[in-house]
Length: 407
Image (cartoon, rainbow, N blue to C red; front, side, top):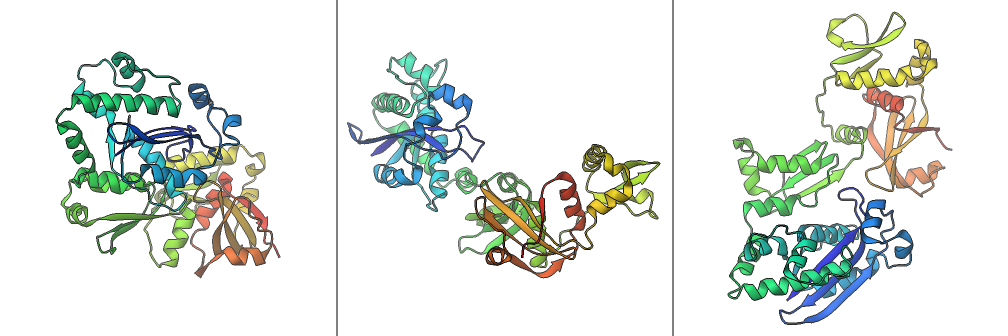
């Protein structure tokens, strides 16, 4: 049994896309036994490029079902089948991440008609769906709409099956796609990892954590570990069977979590901000050990960006005004900033210049009172005082909205 699928997305950034059009044909090798075709409300914008490509407008999907309303139907029609598509990696990823948002782990075997076509029909000028089916005389109506593309993919699949009389190539590709080879192990373990900063946990078959770290890009870091030829990672590469992660959103939250776990990551601030001859300059701290820098930076570039920002504000020509702006000693404030994911915000509670707690809340949640914040906050075992430099830089960049502590 096969499920021939095509999906159109709203064109959002990688891993943030949402389905706007879906078509699935259940096929038993002889005939279509079931089908499901629907527009889907992405609950977010559709890019102008996608609107032009697919002719699907926000108005068309406004009254369409949301994905959670069609999820059960998708599971029913694809159950106990091999998912078939033209560039199936995209369609399969769209399904997995859509189900993941609902807390469901969608897994199935897949088959891609592109490598199949390259083996069965060599020497074609192009293997894009539109050009390939046109070359083969397969009708394609409503190109770049799920129903038309899925139906054309089904007809292409029928042709490929008929040409593979012994089922050798289809079986071989199926085995290659779904075999537990090392390459596929990497693919399965990393395919849904986000390209975002946070904590990553490598676990063995028993669930024991064999590696954990805070990284700037969870997906990139994980793939780097798997692709490393260093003997240092050989044992881990063999043992790891699952990867979990915890998004932090900002380095500040990550450091608060590390501090709460009593984990110290060494950082070097080689450069500093100094005020000399009525102007701000950035230089290496070790050049002048007697003068204390106003701010510290990890890189010269970070420092020059800060200076550019400072120079945009005339009031900071007075260094004392600038020092007062970033002074933390007596601050009692609620700081609001970007959360770990779309639609989420984070907050910091600062009392007498010390971070006492932090937390996250949905964009539309109201947190004007301390009683509301108390339900969401995560208290630190010890008030944090060693992040002043990071907070000063964040304040300078405008990363946070600062408010008086509510009552």
